[in-house]
Image (cartoon, rainbow, N blue to C red; front, side, top):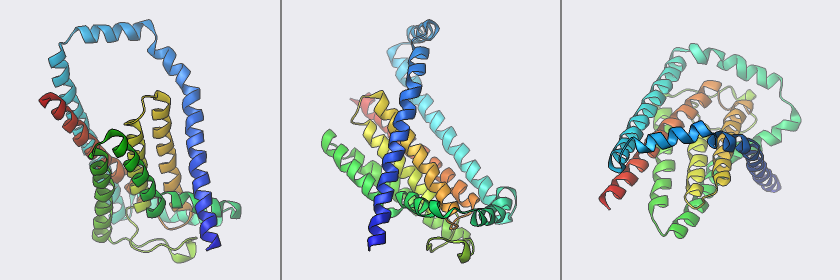
Length: 277
């Protein structure tokens, strides 16, 4: 029990460090972005673009652009996932480095990092990830007095969980050999559930936070922290020996594809509501 509490505390500390790192990174980059956006040629281009279209055509063009970009993102994500899946089933392409990569990591593990990697991987586990999404959902739903955050979170996390479990059962890939595993992991290996759900879960938290703040720094920090956390969780699964690199890449690609579906649907729905009103 004491070990569980210590691991949980380390996970929360790691989360705080990721957010702090994201904030420092955004704060250091923001002055350059501000200088670029304030450049005369950028302002002139924006003014010419706004003057070239009417309000109605701008709305129609924006919706069409969003739907086209969203459909394109979903298509690209699906193609990338299919390519990774082909490599896994055939044992070539990216899957060819799976066994050597896991073997190399097992031989070069640093004992001092083992506990840290376990704490990182727990950030993408069902307990902490679900708790984070639930807290963000409740706070935003109460602040906005809307059920939209609830439906968004339920669809986002629920949908990716269903996709991951169905694909795992269909592919039936075994995990790396137990001697390579630092933590206990059950079920099939491809795609990595931690990688897919952490990507969607962290993105949902950032998305929800952006609904209740106008601060550009806060928004950028939320998305940057989510991206850093996603990468860290995925890499920790390989380090701990419970997933191959192709499992993690497959999980990330699947998560991005589902997030593209979710984002496109949400933005298109918002435009429809605004147009109706």
